[in-house]
Image (cartoon, rainbow, N blue to C red):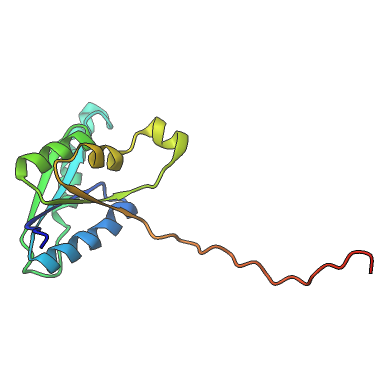
Length: 153
């Protein structure tokens, strides 16, 4: 049987992360596991004089993420640094059983230029990683039925 006692849910507060949150909650409920919600603040994204206010804003956002099911033990963690590196380090330090995170689903040049936090976490994580893609917003359009074309009739 699979043993899942600790789940790490890193978030960047995007819709991609929000989608992963419901998977993390489902696993926590199914396995009676503890859930750690992690946000990694990246220093240098705002001017130095606004950094403290920016940190407080993101800490406040992090603390607001609370499951409706009060039986799920929840811990909030705010770290600073490189998101992928901090997620992997924290998962190893805590002895996490599974990391559940969202992905933007970038491919090709976008992924190579931007780097992929999800990909780096999958590659370097000391535990299993569940990567959740945002469900497709639009279904592929169905082709209308066409009449056969008869040439030379």
